Length: 129
Image (cartoon, rainbow, N blue to C red):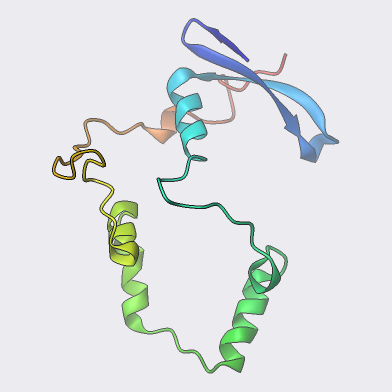
């Protein structure tokens, strides 16, 4: 990994291209955004799905489970589609990620959002060395 002039260059493996090692150059902001997408909130544990929730034929298996259990999706479950990630997490777990974890009183305020359109994985920021 190399950091130079506000750009991060790192090596990655392209599994679709016969496991070739390639280099990618991204801005520091985009590299950090992508990196932190893999960091879980406190008290969360990463699990790998298996069985009916494994990636292979997931939708087919879930549909079969719903048929076998006579499960009907209620309309209230569909209302979660319009919630932000923080609102959904609060609704499901009761954890408000906007509250300071140290004092429990302070509120997080969003100052700026990164514009995803400026950080395309294709084009000029994606360089192969």
